[in-house]
Length: 111
Length: 111
Image (cartoon, rainbow over all chains, first blue to last red; front, side, top):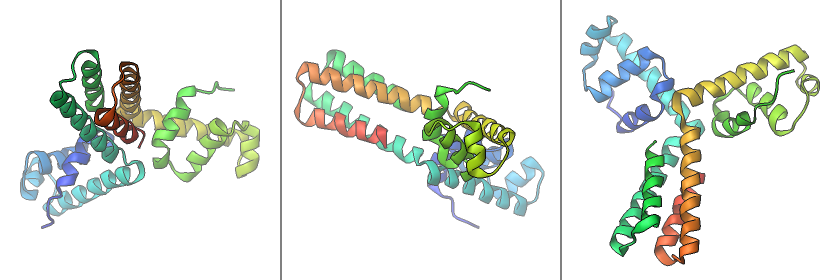
């Protein structure tokens, strides 16, 4: 049994919509619903080994996108810095239109 | 002759690294170097019609990614709001660590 990679859940949220529906469903069952390989096999009607291979291919596809594009990492860094900025504004008592602009920025980051 | 779509240049910067090298090269010649179909045909040794088809397929692939993921739009909105925030800080005389944090945020957006 291979270990669940926590990074995958994040990449799945980010790039999942470009996977085939079958691959997305399998990763979703495995990472978000925490089903076992045997349970997923029962759900979609293929062998346990088939599920294992499908998960592996889907994971490789997610890693391919992130390796090529690096957008998940870029978004995460942007979000962290927006959080840092907002909490500095909070502590510094910065309010009004500048605080509003920072909050609109955060909404744009979250998409 | 089809019209050049200005949006493509932007999507090419954003998602170009997931295209095959051949497709990326052709779009790069066409959109960034402004070569004609005939010139590109000469460069890569296929017919003018072949170039036209390759450009069309590559464009469809870029549109597919953006339609599924919407990340280019999300980044562009984030960048615009970060610019807006920085210019409000400039006008408001906001300096020091909060301004620095906003500038680090902008660096993260630009990746």
